[in-house]
Amino acid sequence: MKRTTSWTSALGMLPPVKRRTKIIASIGPACSDDATMKAMLEAGMDVARLNLSHGPLETHIERLGQLRRVAEAAGLPIGVMADLPGPKVRIGQLPEPIELADDSEILLEPGNEPSHAGHLFVDYEGLLTDVQLGDRLAVGDGSIVLQVIGHEPNALRARVLYGGQTQGRPGLHIPSERLRLTTPTPEDLRLLDAMVDHDIDFVALSFVRSAHDVRRIGLEPSPRGPLVVAKIETQAAIENLDGIINESGAIMVARGDLGTELPIQELPHLQKEIIARCIALGRPAITATQMLESMITNPSPTRAEASDVANAVFDGTSAVMLSAETAIGDDPAHVVATMAAIAQRADQAFDYDGWAHKLRRGQLLERQGQDSAVTDVMTLATWQAAKEIDAKAILCITRSGFTVRAIARFRPRAPILAFSPEDRTIRQLSMSWGATPIKIDRIDDNVITVHRVLELAKLQGHIRTGDIVAVLGGSSATIGATDTLRMVRCP
Image (tube, rainbow, N blue to C red; front, top):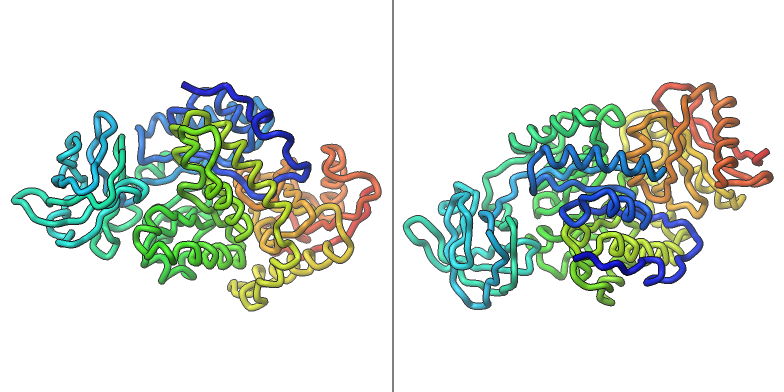
């Protein structure tokens, strides 16, 4: 039963500065109706996540169309991300929620049959040969931990070290070095083809272990194809991080499985490192898992959860993600609004001046290719000029979104207005830190286009007559290097 608490009255007046950190919210049974989707958009949802691990493909395609229809009616932009299942090992369907008690024993048997409290079926054929005595296995988000204590003829016997309640079809985390599965799986590729046919904006690739895994997905570069979001959730991914970042369009710090793979005390430090390296290379970084989990059933987050969201913003994350909180929670729109309020307040306290100085010049110019190097230099110059002259906004003219992601690395104080004629680019920029996507009908020569975007920005109330703004774009109408910067006083 959904609460009817007004999120605006519950949270009070939001800070006046526009939020820079984006919010990704998962769509599920709790928010599958038009009214709730609209409320989530109005509360601050920038990107909707469709978790393809749960439910039939047809349902997700229907929700993709529904989200776009609701967003268009509300006049609010929305990006949609399809999260592929990957080689995720899952427990057979639980007909009802079960409680796994501490120190109890259960059987784990290969198969897809329905499970119950004392006997869990696992959809991994190599379970009996790959998992060894003493291995620790985590259920769901990792709060339930099992240890293998024996072999039966057709099953493993495990003791519940840390118990709890689980439901549905939760994942079973097996140490990645034990698994012989590869990503993307044939099922991933089948689902991907269907979602690409429906112009999906982002595709999240699970269980990535190397840059080769990302290349195997075989998509056209954005905006002709969706941006690929590589999920960092294994020890191998940490070891191959630079290659994965270079091959991906964005990165997700998937703290659930990552926190199970590695010592928990390492997770906060890895989060900071991954985010910093992503942003330096112009890739949006997403922080995910258990951010406001208590709000699945509670009207307010814990103090620790509020601090977790704020600290992710201080780390420089581009977006924070909600999972079960909105997919199956009591009040999805209220959760989004709470996340928005915390992130918006943290944005105000962000160290804008200090951030850019942390980015080593060498990192900024690591990309290969002349066009990329030109864009790196031009965006650095734009950040410095906008800072010195206290520009009221940075206007980016882009086809692919690359220019916007490049300038966003510096976390400028000035708002970023992102103008593009490409529908998919507009939707993909919904994930980019600080960017306000604005659709234009075309890109002409630089002088004409600059005049057009100034007029449009003024018409929409982003800037006023007399404001000094930076306008960043290319000298031609084709996709290529960002090679033109103009400091302009708005007419």
